[in-house]
Every structure is written in C-alpha cells, then in structure tokens.
Image (tube, rainbow over all chains, first blue to last red; front, side, top):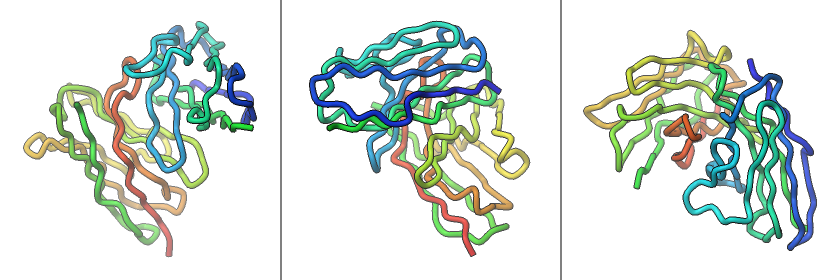
Length: 108
Length: 116
C-alpha cells in the first residue's frame, strides 16, 4: 500500500501570504497525484490533477508541483475562502487508492 | 453537469446491514469509474470501494467480504451493500466519479452510524 504523508497537519496563515503544503508518497507515484479541498460540512472538491493541472474553475492562485514521491500544493496570496482541509491522493498503485491525512489551513 | 445524490444512510446496530444508493444524473453510471469514499467523524478521507466501467470491483481491506459495490443501470444508480457493520464503519459515505485525473464529481455524502 502506498502511504501518503502530508505536512504540516495545521497551518495558520495571514490573508495575502503564500502557503506551501507538502505531500510525500512512500514509493513513487509518478505524476498520478491529485489534490482536494474540503470545507466544513462539504464534500471534497477536486483542485489539481496529474500533479499540476488545475481542475475546471479553480483559481490560478492554486498550483501543484513535484514528481515521484514529493509533491507540493502552493496557494499564492491566500484568500479567506481558502480556509479548508487539503488532501492529496494517489492513483498510481492501487488498490487501495490512498489519501494523505490532510493539512488544515487556518486564516489568522 | 454530472450530479450525484446519495441516500440510504442511518443508524444501525453492530452486526446489522444497510444499503446505500447514489443516483447519477448527467451521465450514465456505467460510463466511468465509480467509487465510495468515507470519512469518519473528525478524520480524513478513506477510499472504500470502486467499480470499473467494465464491471470489475475492488475493496479496501477493512471492508472486503462485508461490503459489495454494484450498479443498477435501469435506475442509473451506484449502490453499496454493507453487512456485518462495525462501530468503526461509522462515517459520512460519499460516492465519487472518476479516477484518472481524480475524483471529479462527489455527492453530498450520507451519514452512517453504527451503534447499539
């Protein structure tokens, strides 16, 4: 099973700041990595697929990078509506399809 | 636009059974991967099961031999038959569509509580 590890668990950031979230896979997942955003009481929302491609309607301030085992989600100029939990997920070696434990982004 | 609407959740005693359904609109249930993903209270996301467009199925080890995923093309629904339920199966259950390029579409989720 591919274990996905996200860090940090929680991040408190001021509006307008740049945010960097990390996701590490226990083995290479090549570019088969996606990111989701989940707000309280809502279903997850697809943000980024294939490491760096934004899903439909996702603002340009969200970007992804990485390959193999180390991945990053960057939010440039954090907005108040970006307060959420962010999950990475791999679909390279499955089953099982595995998610990271999530990073909670809080607004200061 | 594809929409997914789950139903069938509720309170069940340990050892009991429950069937969840996910009504698909805007697409046919057979035309893409369909999955169930769950989220225990205050916890992260956990993939539960998937059915291919060709009909093949896979399950997480934690639910194998207890849960069964199947499609009903006549009603354009995805279903999850759950038996021998355990307290640790308590979660919000989401149906999700896609796999390659991510789970693009999600339902709103349906709560399942396993408790005596």
